[in-house]
Length: 78
Image (cartoon, rainbow, N blue to C red; front, side):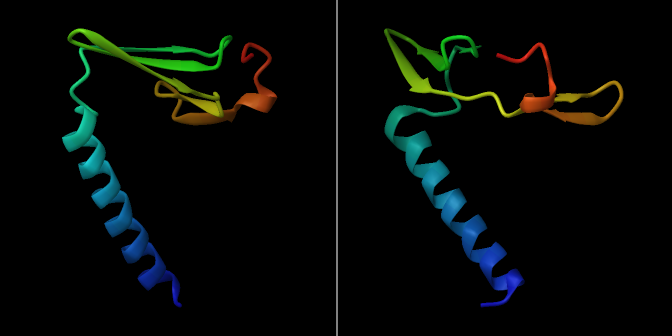
């Protein structure tokens, strides 16, 4: 399989999965979200319920300098 085909199929799959999550549990319509890197949790708040998922910080993007930093090289990342 060539790269262009792999990319196209991957994007189609990503869009289908994202749509399913949007339809099933209103992903993207949360009132608020919070990432607690110390606990390794992402909390999404919806009216009357919370969705909690394990999360891992892999890096950060500095929009002022347009620089990506991997977490393993960032002393402030847990």
